[in-house]
Image (cartoon, rainbow over all chains, first blue to last red; front, side):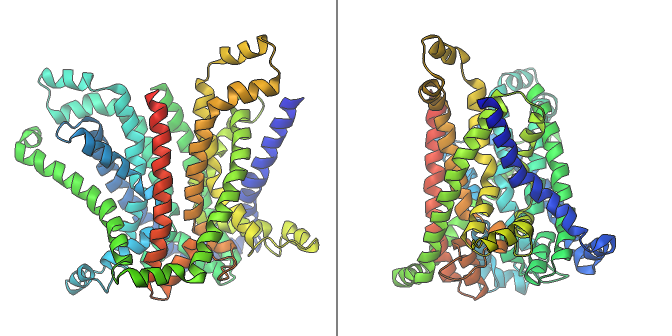
Length: 266
Length: 271
């Protein structure tokens, strides 16, 4: 009896909070028929915004994957960092989780904006950071930084250093040890981290909005375009772009499930 | 290549590059925002923070995030429990759906809520008839926060329930304890650390949320303007010092929460 009740309640919560809204995005973008949807996503500003999002996702994921894996290895293995410092650095990794995206964007404007010393220096050299692509990439790097580190660290801790030490005592070079010994065990953690990083950088909104200035056809990303369309009461167009983003998210969610299963097996 | 990585100079350079990346990307901006908010001295900071609209925004944010977190504690505990303990059709599907709010862009989440509860929608029309206003009022902000923070509590208690020793529970039954009593004296204490850390993560995410809220809140100063939207407004109206001052308040709160979560989890790990 109780069991039935709890399961039904669970279904109701999921239905109201997750499933119905998701369906609404799908039906909403067809509200004006097929042509409305096509028009919504083939507008020049939509195509440009999707391209900007694509660039940011690729650059951010590549950088944070490489630096994230390296930092995770140092934080777990390195002997040249003292224990206390290691613990301090370890707690600093999570900082971006505690920072509101808007504040993350504000930080970059405060340090590198056009009115700052560093900002003017770069601008004199002909390199714009804030209200341009580099600032948007920086903002997204900041927001997504902990994801990879947090996925790889527990795996490294779990497998321990023995195999790696054995390999290097046997004379294997560090690069070789990494590929042959470390990589196979952290692989699924890394893949999971990549999926999380892609999802987060695809959907980042607050930080990018502040840093980009949201200039149409220049610094507008897919999420900031959705925001602008809603503000302009152009809901059908907003829905079209939102549907593209939602489809990607659902795809990533499926990937996440798959990676999680593999991660458990290995 | 291998020789390169083995060389002392290279390895030093490599290490420094990683650490510099970390410090420049994460630590420097946070130091920057604290120094900026006090850059003009203590008085302007105090003026920015004591602006009634500013502290009203912060108070509103905290109040609504508390409500959303409490709702999440109830819903999350129930769902986490159901998904681990019961086998029923669609369980796996629901379990993977839990992470949807993490995967979905928050702006898309906000748009979904707007479509579903907005004035032209079925629910919105119904609520309006009985005199409740959802979108552009507080309920919509709570729904947005609830949506965004939905996975935290569930994901925090699930591993604890999985690890839990079933024999303790069975022992309680054998000794004649009722179901309710077993739940509160055996099962609940096991879940408690998860509920607490999940709730704190949800709360800190709730007070930080921007994307989903800005689309549904209406953003009327003093009424439905939450802190992150207030900060955004100050940046837009070229008052970075004021924005930084409110940010410092919000950040300090978030850091305290994060630190507490680490403490709870650290103690659990030590046991």
